[in-house]
Structure formats: structure tokens, C-alpha cells
Length: 530
Image (tube, rainbow, N blue to C red; front, side):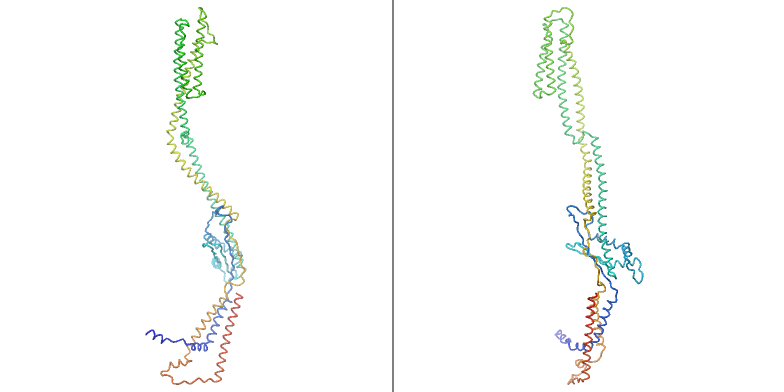
């Protein structure tokens, strides 16, 4: 019920009341509106114009695929652009441009270098253009000046600075990275050379004790042991031969001392036959294990042949002594045909020399075997020491190879940058020559002036309406009376009043038409003249 009562007490919208205000206060509204619009719009023609020249720079990717050549500079374009921008907007660079193009020389009050730099930085604008995945694909450079040609020249100069600075920065970074890798590679090369020298000295100091020589040492040791066994067997056979020859000589000397004939003592032929049987049995044993080219087999065959020749000579000598009846002095031995005793003595001397030689050879082989066994005993220790040296060498080699690969790749990338085949900036839109000022935007000022004029007109008309205490409406009069109105007297309009009313209406429409026409003309003028 309370809400319904409040809704009934709310004043209803009275259109006639507001139309009456418009009829009474249209001049109070139109004149301030026109004055407000004229003030704002006129200011756009008084303020000094500022022309903005702009250029679009495209960020071109390297022409060489990354699979072939990997760039060796910072791939973060935004960081590189910030660095380049800071360098270009430095005090030294900007003052150089100011002096070169004679900027800010027409100021009413001379500006200090710091003030000039601060103002020029405000006049420069860098706008990034991003594509897919929020990557920078291009950027705009703008510069504002009171002269359109000056704005274009400064923008062109800034564009050249950005392009040249990007090339120089990339080349310097690329060359610096390559130089760094070259220095690191040289250090790694020296370390690798030191490791190689340590390994070389270790191998030179421990020849025969290295793990790589284990198989060779085992093979040599096995061969020496086989040779030792063969020499010992040959020495044993030589010693047996020595005993046989010594026995043969003793028998022959005993035969000569007794004065018996050859028929009585056949000079140990049974012993020779036994020795031949033994030698042949030994030959059969060696032939079953070795070929005929083996030294022991060949030597044994020669020994058997010499023994057989000795037996044949003994038999021939005995026959000769039995046939000849020589009672005179003993015959002188023919040097070309020595006696059996001389032959046996010669064989004994040769046998003695052979025994001595084989004993020396056996002693030398035992020394060699001991040496190789000592080398084999040192092999585990040398293997651990060599493994420690090799581990450091392998690490240095891996580091050197990795640095060498990176250095070669970096050198190729540097060559690509020097040939300007890397990422670079290219002017897509050259610096523009602005025909209309960027500030003030007279069309925008015209719209703002309309808004300001409307607000000012409403305020002025409202103030006049609030200060006017006259009554213009029957309802207002009825609200002031304490009693209800019984009858009303109609308004008597005289011709003079009607004439004044029409004149006022025409004046209002003429004023409104003039204001609207002026605003429209100003808008058209602002549109075409910027």
C-alpha cells in the first residue's frame, strides 16, 4: 500500500511544461551553445599544428633455414628492440639528429640540451605489431613535428638508425659469440694436448705393461716357454750325446793301450748301434709332433747321418788294419781322412760347444720369461692408471669436439649475418609526408565543441529558468492557491501580442538555423582541412 501511495505522489512527466521552457529559453540555450562550440572549435585553429609521420618496418626472418644454419644471436626480438631503442634514444644519438636536422630551433625560449632530448623522446613513438602466437612481426615508428617535411625527415633518419643498428648489433653479437667460442676452443685444445701428452708419456714409460699389450705379452711368453722346453729337450739330448761320445773315446783309447787287433775289439760298434737306435727312436717321436722343417728334426737327422758316417769309417778302418800287416811305426794320419778317434773327438768338441750354447740360450730365455711375467704382473696396476688418464682425456676430447662443432656453427651464422642473410628489418611503408596535422584534430575538436556548447546552453538556460520567479503555467498558479479554482478567464491575445509571438518564434528558428548551419559548416571545414 505504501509503495502504491508513493507511486501516486510521483510527478508525471509534463511535456507541455518542458516545451514551454524551450520556447522561453531557446535563445538562452542557443547562444551559449554557439559560444561554447566556437571557443573550442576556434581553439583548434589557434593551437600550433603537429604533423605525425610514420613508417612500417617488417621483421624478415632469415633466408637460410634453421636446419642448415642456426643463428647465434639473441632470438628474443622484443628484448633486442628494447636495447636498440634505448641506444637510439640515447642523449648522444638524439642530439646528433637535432644538430643534423636543426630541430627545435624556432622555439620562443631556447631549450637546454636535456630539455630538447626529453621533448624529442616525447615526440617519438614506437608501436609493435604482433601476429600469431603473440610474436612481433613488424613495428611502426612515428615522429611528431610542427612541420610535415621535418617529421618525414626525422622519421626517415630514425628508420635508418633502427635498420643499421639492428644489423650492427646482430653482427657484433654474432662475432662476439664466435670469438668467445674460439677462445674456449683454444683453451680446450690446450687441455686436450696436455692430456694427450700425459697419456703419451705414460705409454712411453710403461712399454709392455699396457692393457693393449696383454695379448701380445701372453703370446710371446707362451712362445718363450715353448722355446725353453725345446731348448731343454735339446740340451738333454746333447748331454746324452756327450756321455756317449766320451764313452766311445774312452773305449778307443783303452783299445789302443791294450794292443789288441781290430778283430778283438770292434771300437764300440754295439754302443754306436745303440746310440743310432736311440736317435732314430727320438726322431720318430719328434716327427710325430713336428714337420720335417722343424729345426730340432733337421738337426737330429744331421746328427744321425754323422753317427752313421762315423760307424762306417770305423768299420772301414778296422778292415784296413786287418788286411795290412804293418808292424812298423804307426802310420801318420791323413789330414784329409782323419781317424775315428779324431772324428769322435771333433764331435765331442762340437757337442760341448752346443751344450754351452744351449745352456746360455736357456738362461737368457728364463730371464726373458721372468721379465714378461713381471710385465704381466704390472698390467692390472697400469690398467687402472691408464684408465684414470684416459678418463680425463675422453672428457677433454668430448668437450673439445662439442666446442669445435659449436664454433663451426657459430662461424657459419656469423658469415650469414655478415652477408645480411639473417633476421633483418625491411621498410614496408616508407616514411609518410602528412598533409593534415595529427594535432589538433579539428573535426574531433568540432565534436567536442558541440558537446561543450550543449552542456553550457543547458546550464545557462537552467540558471535563467531557476532565477525567473514568474508563473507561466495554470497548474503552477493552481498549486499556489489555497482553495480550488471555480472558474477560469481565457487568455486574451491581442494582435500586437500575436505579432510579437510570431516574431519571437521566427527569431528563434533563425537563430537555431544559423547556429546549426555554422556548426555544420565548421564541421565540413574541419573535415577537409584537418
